[in-house]
Image (cartoon, rainbow, N blue to C red):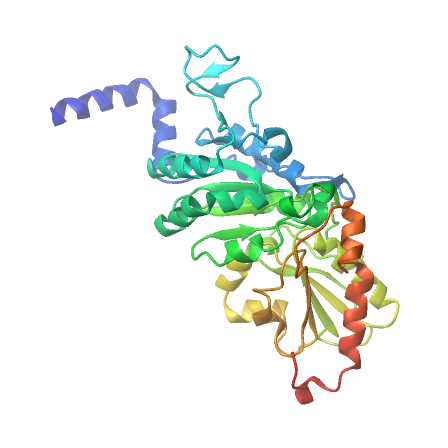
Length: 384
């Protein structure tokens, strides 16, 4: 019987060379040679929510990777997770339009836990890269299955959108204040919160180019301007972003000083706020470095020399900016740092009003930097 199966497989492989090459690639957990060049590039200055950028990048990736398939828990239009509008993963006997047993789009329904659990089963087959989307606040329903995916090291991809108080009028029931810290506490789970469309595509390509582990993307509802590369104080993200944390912007040095006066560490939509604060401080003669930290887990995996080059141990004036609880940032802040965070449940108002209400603004970040500069020499300070 075994010999017969081998003969049948050899016959199939010789008659279907393209499919056989695909099978070998999937078994080897490799991407095709054309994959890297398929990554979309977004024009500088374009206002684009990272959820939309992720959706565009996901479609581009799915065109190269037939093993990538999934959908959303009833929020496909909001999550931007529909990669194929013409076919759905359904038996041909289904009366629904586009029914196709090989469809890449899955309609999970309003069942977040089932979605995450089913993704685990799909990932265990070894040949697929499943993904599932919902609002970040609803990751609570998925948590037991997400934890098991981390325990089993499965290549599940979670698309969590509406990731902050920036979703506005839905109010505190939909605003994920504590969720980033809670998810980062799961060993073996990577949480990626990109700062703009460019970071979104680059980080997705990094995830899909690796053999795979569970990864959650935390994506904005609100539009964010696409940052420039290598101009006006900005550094390139193309390769550096893969380190999890990198220097995204720095006020040019006027006196050849090696270290900045203050380091501002931010994630997601708050990187834009950090850059605006750094520019304001530059007008006052203060040199600020903005570190974009799309993934704490990737940054923590880097060797100490790299981490120290991004956040110099000699610079103890540090600020973190994230629209969630500050828990999880104090190891980087050290004794003298300040967390710009949200330490209570959100509220119902527009995104702009809420960021102002909770003090997550360029003015608040700049004032925190000024306050740190008023302190005595860091070596003599005994306070957090």
